[in-house]
Amino acid sequence: MALTTLDPHTALIIVDLQKGIISLPVVHPIGDIIERARALADAFRARGLPIVLVNVTGRAPGRTEQPRQTGPCPEGWSDLIPELNQQPSDIVVTKRTWGAFASTDLEAQLKGLDITQVVIAGVATGTGVEATARQAYEHGFNVTLAIDAMTDMRLEAHAYSIANVFPRLGEAGTTRNIIDLLAARTP
Image 1 (spheres, rainbow, N blue to C red):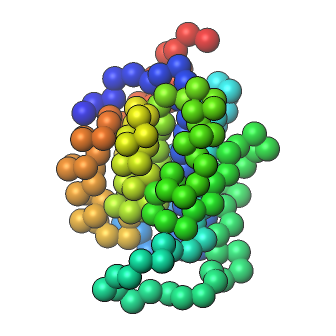
Image 2: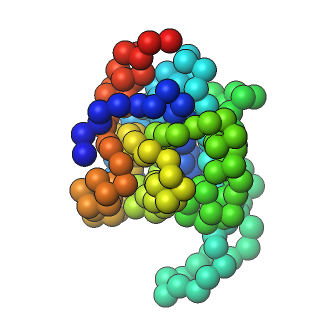
């Protein structure tokens, strides 16, 4: 669904733009993704809207068929990248699952701020971003996805989420679309 509106109480969630993950091979230039995420953060901050910066420090304990890394993450791996310009007012969520809402207090924090909508960007489209979008939707938030401010390690996962999953969870648009909607709002 095309982007139509942003609620007055909207928060930006940036998923897993951290040192260890941005060094992984992704299908879109990571510098462009970081630049767009920063532009969104700057636009939200300029309007006094909440920013949620999410990092991941491990994995959920369930068993999978794929081999898994065990043990702690390397030093600095989960540090948020400095390009996000983290501010004291930002909400920081550290997760151990794909989605930012599972096993964290993110829902309570956002509802405590009367947030009704979230804009989501980050890495990886088919895992962290999609899981966060699904959980946000399930918690009753209106969901907007900044499709040019996200990427994945697998093109097919990125494309599938955008074409088949995201239209069922909310609206999608570009960074420019979202910033223009923010700019058009009356203060």
